[in-house]
Amino acid sequence: MKRLLPLAILGFLFSPPAISAQHTGSAKKFVKKGIELFAKGDLAGAIIQYDRALTADPKLAEAYLNRGNAKRAADDLDSAIADYETAGELEPQLFTNNRDISQAYLTRGYQRSNRLELDGALADFDRAIKLDPRDAEAYFKRGRALLIDGSVDFAIADFDKSISLDDRNPLVYAERGFARQTRGEKNAAEEDFARGLKLNNDLRFTLDMHLLELQLQIKEMRRRQATRRRNIASLNGYSLRDGEFRHRVPVV
Image 1 (cartoon, rainbow, N blue to C red):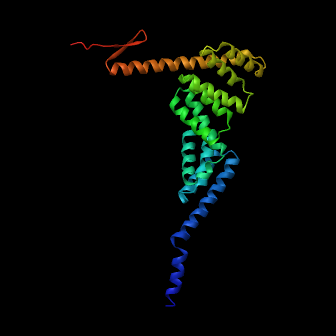
Image 2 (cartoon, helix red, strand yellow):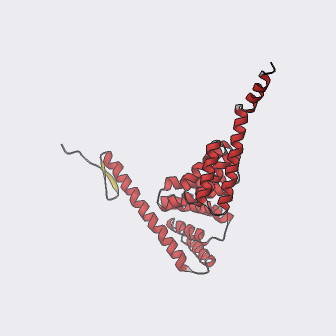
Image 3 (cartoon, rainbow, N blue to C red):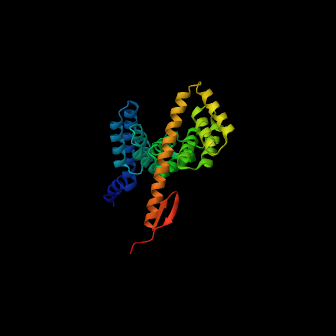
């Protein structure tokens, strides 16, 4: 019986809970080292440390969160957001009031919007707004994407919300003015353009270039939408002529 007692003690010391605690302790040391390297600007080195932490403890939310921050700083937004989402699944409270995460979605949404990948962009903007409902820039950029997509009323609603949160951004007034102009609201549009100019120190060139870029994106989006409609119509036995769909009779 006396011989069995030391064995039992050893078995307790090296039981799964004890081993798990050791792994977590090691993982947190790697995270600490990663944070130190991140602070020095060594993003690659920090990511290596976070990788080691996750090898030691694959369920350590803190490691995913910090690796996401390092990847975001390295402009690897897709991987950063994947890490953030994993961290949130493990510890949902990490998403609460976390500006790093909301800004990652906002940045990727803007990049997608500029590439006219509007479905993905709008999904990212929705996520950013859900994480930070007081971010004026998120409403502005979602409004821009909606305007490019042709949803003018929803775009104006987002511009209104953005201005209610921050009324000092001249670009929001310029884009709302453009949206109102498309609805035939000439006076309201002119008021927005004037307000935007005033906030931009009367530098019309900057706003004009911004609106020109917007118009080019809208034009390209309309071209893509028309092409998509023609392709769908062609598959269904219709052709688009003079802006109207006409049935195409098969040649026998």
